[in-house]
Image (cartoon, rainbow, N blue to C red; front, side, top):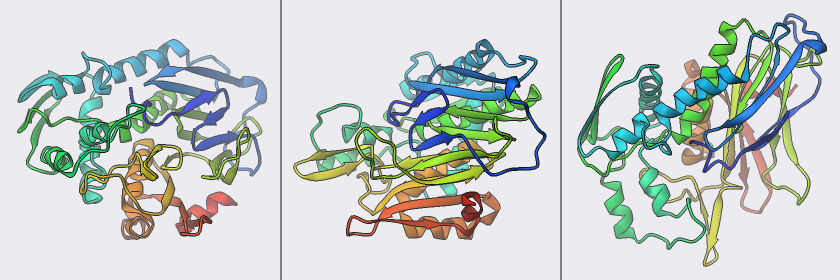
Length: 355
C-alpha cells in the first residue's frame, strides 16, 4: 500500500490530490477519437484509488484485468502485505532469497538505485524508520531526540554498505548488514505502478487515455474533446470548500507527478514539521519549497524526482535538472518567498506545457 502518506483520493475525472484533470482546450495532431467510444474505469489500490479514462470502442480493457495487475504488483512491493516480497526483506534478519516472477521488485530496485545515486541520496527508499519516528503515521507522537535520530541514521542509507542485492531474474538474493535496515518504495512504487498499467494499455492498442493512481498520472493522445489533456496544479493556498489552481498544463504522451509539504505536516509546540525527511540529517526539511511538479517520460521518474526535489529545495533542484538534460525532466516549483507570498520557478521546457 503506497497511498497512505499521500492522502490522495479520486472522484471520477477529478483527482483530489495536487493534480486535477480538467476538461478542455489546446489541440494536437494525434488520431481523432469520437466521444461515444470513451470508457471510464475506477477502483481501489495501494491504500488509495485509481482511475482510467480511455478511448476503447471494442472494450479491450476490463477492470478485472487492471485489478489483477495491481494485485500482483502489491504482492511484490506493498509493505502492508505481510506476504509481499518487500515485507519478506524487511522481516528477514540477514539474507532473503525469492523469485521476482514479474520483475516488479528488480525494476523498482534498479531504478531507485540509479535515482538515489544521481541525487546524491536525496531520494532514499530506506528512510521509513525516520518517517515512523517523526510520527507521520499517527495523530500524536513525541518529537524524537537527537540520540534517537542518530541511532536510526546508522541503518538508513540506500547507497551505504548496509545491504547487497543480487539480481539474477527471476531469482533475487537480498542481504542486510543490519536487521533494522528496511525498504519502502513509497516514493516511487505508485508512479511505477502507473507505468505498468500504461504498458498494458499500450499493448492493448489504446491510443488515447488518462491513467491515474493516487495522483500520479500518465496521459496519452487526446481527451474526449480531441485536445491535449489538461491537468491543473493545486495552489498551496486553498480556500475552504473550494479548489484553487495555481496553473494548468496541457500535456500528452507524458507522465506527471507532484510532491508537496503544504498538506502533509503537523504542528507541535508552535513548530511546523513537514513530512519530507532529509535522509542525511534525519529530520524534516525546513526550506521554502512547498511543492514540486515533475513532467517526465515515465511516472516512476516523475514520482521519485518530485520527492527528491522536495528534499533538495528550489535552487539545487533547478541546478540538478539543468545539469542532467538527458533525464528529460521538466519541473515547476512553488515556494514561499519568506513573506508568505507564493513564488514560482520552472524549467524553460515546462513553459511550453502552459500554452
